[in-house]
Image (tube, rainbow, N blue to C red):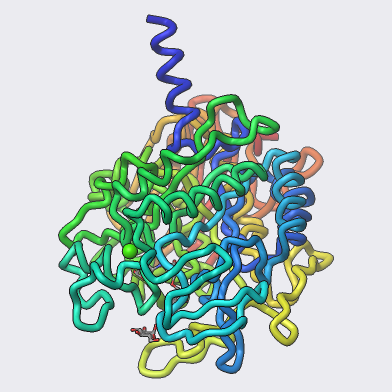
Length: 511
Ligand code: QV4
Ligand code: CA
């Protein structure tokens, strides 16, 4: 019995659902469009010391260079080959990053674009990040190599060759997504080329993969590829560890397929999470925070241990992909911090924090016509992430993951890891609070009037530093102090005009 229990515990920890973070590290950050050299430094100087578990990096394989006339971020979702050679850096820099991050206990997850190659109308030539030749018209990618019969053109039945209806699973999986040349993933040859690429990354030491456009691949084809993958590099991971897999499946409930078809392969991105949370925090559609009492599966989300969750991602923060107008981003900083704070305090799902760059937002007809703008750059070369004296980032990198409120909630999540969701309180409107066992407690005031209430925190008596308005430094609080009585009760007062109308305390913020 004991061995069985142990085996099943190991089975879970070692399997594709586990992010393989170090013990006590519970979140990843997406360092969107960062250079490998900057990520290596960030792992050492910031992520490890602040308890981040891992980093999702932008696709590391060679992509098309789009100049129309400036380079969009989305060119990285148009592969040309599997050489590790992009605007973020070359293979040596990638290896150095993975080694240095792993050495300080921060994992690297690769965004794997394996559903397709570049757009069908991309022409031919060597306009690619490593100069590899391609011919989109003839479907030739000699560097892999792929040729015409490695693509789905014959299989797709629509007139345009592209996805015309999302209500037809065959179109969604076998036709072109926005004209991107769709790979024939049922072919043994194609599967082995993709597995070879992923195994090269595993050998270098990555801990797992985001599978881009997973909804556009048959679950069985994904499984066949995953079955070819090696276990993780034993320099950093226990023998027998399988790569962490999270599949980009956008299931908002309206299409004739369910994300549970993908559970056998790994986790899935739960897009309802950010859409709904944004709606609640914005108080749209009659939503209020009191309704968050049963946040999680009852909101028709996938099971917690199959979910990868986030408030916004690189697509929906600029109107691509799914989510719509309710999605909160750094542009709405005050509400955004509350949403991220709620996500990190709540036990549901494995959490991903977004880290963005600023772009010249410009709206016409309600949509951002600058949604294409790539990362901060000099003539196309990605700019360094500079660090200001106050620890924020320069060169237009937003670095939400360094905002005190967000960084401290990542730590909060680590401190309360494994604790139950407890002591829920609400005022029937937008003032809510909840705890995580006897390790942490958080209170929100998203109403238009102030909050002043004495609440059961579940925490041992003592004085705690609020980690939203400040930090605990050298045994004192730089922000608000909360006094918890020996009965666990504490008085909270939050003005509706506070800079950040929420308060969080935890075991490690106790004086
Ligand atoms: C356009 C038209 C086509 C037309 C074609 C003609 O849209 O209808 O046939 O021109 O040449 C870019 C352009 C897009 C262009 C396409 C091909 O924006 O206008 O097609 O290239 O040239 C990102 C961007 C896309 C971008 C793509 C490739 O978001 O705009 O397309 O990269 O560069 C769905 C999917 C989901 C997807 C989401 C955005 O279910 O899987 O849309 N999300 C992931 C990534 C996302 C990425 C892709 C998938 C594709 O998160 O960033 O798309 O890899 O919901
Ligand atoms: Ca496909």
